[in-house]
Each structure stands twice: as C-alpha cells, then as structure tokens.
Length: 232
Image 1 (cartoon, rainbow, N blue to C red):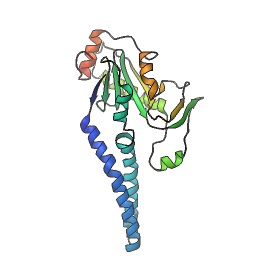
Image 2 (cartoon, one colour):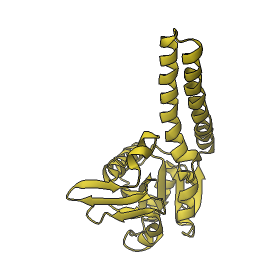
Image 3 (cartoon, one colour):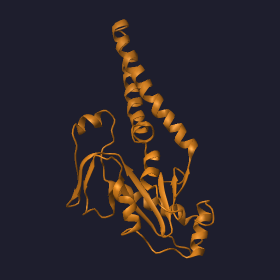
Image 4 (cartoon, rainbow, N blue to C red):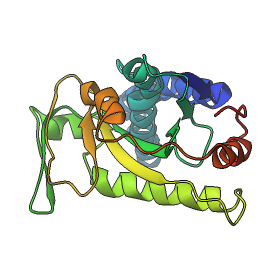
C-alpha cells in the first residue's frame, strides 16, 4: 500500500495538540493565582478561565487526533499495512481526512477513537463506556452518529470528484466508519453502512467490501484528478 500524507498539515496540528493543553493549564492556574492576589479583578479572572476552557476543548480535539496515544494518522497505516500497491491511502490531502483509493473506487474512512461497548439498534447509537461522562468532560469527543459522519464524508468526496473528473467518468465512492481502539467492542450489524473494528478492515476490503476493478481509462482519469501516479 502507498501512503500520501499532508505532512505540513499534520505537523502543525500535532504542535497545537502539544501547546494548547499547556496554554490551558497556564491560564487556569493563572486565574486561580489572580483570584488571591487581585480579587477585585473579577473580569480579568473570568476571561482567563473562559480562554483556558476554550484552549482545553480545542487542545483535546487535536490531542485525540494527532498527539494522543493513538494518533489517527499513525494508526490507520498500521491497520492497513499489508495491502497491495493497488491501494493508496490519502491522509489530509482531500476535503475528508482519510481516503483509501482502491482498484474499485474510493472509500472515505471516518475514523473513531472511542472505546467500550458500541451498538446500533433500531436506528439508534448506543455507547457504554466506563467513566464516559468524565472522559467527555475532559475533552474526549462523544460518539455522535458514525454512520451519518461516514455518509457525509462520502458525499463531500463525491462532490469533490464531480468537479475534477470528466463528465462521462464515474467512480464509486462509499463511506465507512472505523473504530481503532483495541478496547472497542462493536454490535453494529444493523447500521446502514459498514461500521468496522480495526482488526476487521483488511479482511473486509479483500472480501465482502471488494469491488470490481475499474477500467484502466477510468483509473487514469481518477489518478489525474487526485494528482497521483498514473498506475493508481
């Protein structure tokens, strides 16, 4: 498998993931000290608390994706390692973060880092995780609706391609949700689109998720639209 990543984009956000939590801590500690030293400066103290909270929330977003114990841009290549050179993983190069270019089309991968019991039943998502509320208060992203997120990414990717491919060229685009935590346990067979655990992805691509190979002319047009080597 080939990997094409926007290194500058990743490096910048990884740096933000390192700096923002420290900035948040500094602002919150500073507001505490200011409360004792200058109790009359209530307005300044409140502003520092607000800025510290905002820095914490934004910092947690970047930590979860770029600098935590499972950075998505590092984990996904590991998960897909072993795929043939028919596949190219694009990371932060297109309007959606992760796109797998295969011989049968494109797959937008909505990467999710949540752990615990995750299920989809009767049209609703369920998430059972120890200290889930405490984790979310600390900045961990809530589960949301992974199927809708994956579908939105696929739609956005389709719109991007429509503007760059010849009118007579059609390339299949699909979205999937992928949970990368080793502690995630899924019961999502009823989901309207594929929702997979990391250990299932390669087998799914080679089996149930494999699509017919596109004509050579279509693959050349796609490679040009994505600015990839012609053989993709």
